[in-house]
Amino acid sequence: MLQAAISEAQPTTAIAARGLHSLFLKSDGSLWAMGDNDNGQLGDGTFNNTNRPEQIAPNVTATAAGFYHSLFLKSNGSLWALGDNFYGELGDGTFNNTNHPEQILATNVTKIAAGDFHSLFLTNGGSLWAMGNNDHGQLGDGTTDNGNFYTNRPEQIVPTNVTTIAAGGNHSLFLKNDGSLWAMGDNSYGGLGDGTFNNTNRPEQIATNVTAIAAGYSHSLFLKSDGSLWAMGYNIDGQLGDGTFNNTNRPEQIATNVTAIAAGEYHSLFLKNDGSLWAMGNNSYGGLGDGTFNNTNRPEQIVSSGVTAIAAGYGHSLFLKRDGSLWAMGYNSTGQLGDGTLNNTNRPEEIVAGPTGYCQISGQLMGGGNIRLSFVGIASTNYALDRSFSLAPPDWVPQLTNPAGTGGLLMFTNTPGQATNNYWRIRSVP
Image (cartoon, rainbow, N blue to C red; front, side):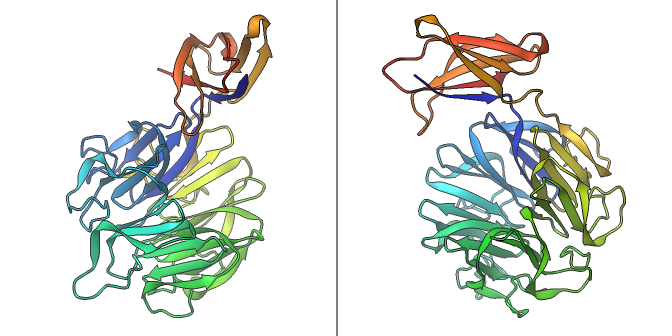
């Protein structure tokens, strides 16, 4: 019996940015990187910057970018880290940088977040763990004194019920499964939203009915269950989008019908439910993508529709479109846009094209128990048919490889096993 057919023409599926480098995933689970590599944060075995995307690792399900370090998860739940480790943010028990991914935990990790110099992750059951710089209490472990400003081993902060995490410059945010928002760390500009400007080294509850969070250098964004966008903290460049350049230590509502948010160091991005992309804040390098280099303290529409994911770095921005294409704009001093140049741009430019006809797949029952899978891919590209007997976890076994013909049409004929549940996928191959 044919249970599932998954087309994988390798569109871009996830993005991450911070500092001066960018990371993205393709639908085959491959991790790609570009930009600054002075501390090995690209994980390619060198310390050389690159202005073109290069493949780093397979079987990756999530990624996060710190200022000079990177994290990713593999499909088996293992946590991997690379790059700068001055404060122990890699969590490997040393303070040594590495330009190769190293495994930190073997299993059970479900989510990751990278701040400027600290890292957060969740394990099964909603346990929150942290490592790295703690000079403002951003790890939330109750310390910052007696020289104990950092830890190079993961330490448990909250034992259960955490669902979402975000790491900023020197502060951290997380959500619990009851929709409550919690914060800790630097609050010099009100980024924690607790009505004070006092740092805290213990998590404190800020708001309820929250569904998504994002943390910039010293500002924070969150969404409520009604789709409203709220902001607090540093606002010198207008990154809160409230029409002023005044900091605030209380959450204030900015927009409605919002579905996704991203906080760069000094700018902010969000998506509305019509797929439109909006931006506000610092635009010195063109990171807002509006065709100017002018800051704005009001949200302005950048793309009218079709955007599905966003990420924001130091002065650059990334977004995905519905067709799986990757777009970038802004600061490009180390090649973080991945366009082959080191030139800044104030307009979105396509970096990785979306595959033509992605996900156009159909099945036709044939004689003798056979099924024919027809797929529209990219002309002359090789595609492999893989089979697995389970998806928990999948154990994909290659069956056939064929090239797509003129117009991208591809057909596979195979015989599913009658006594087992069969899962099939089609993926592009070199």
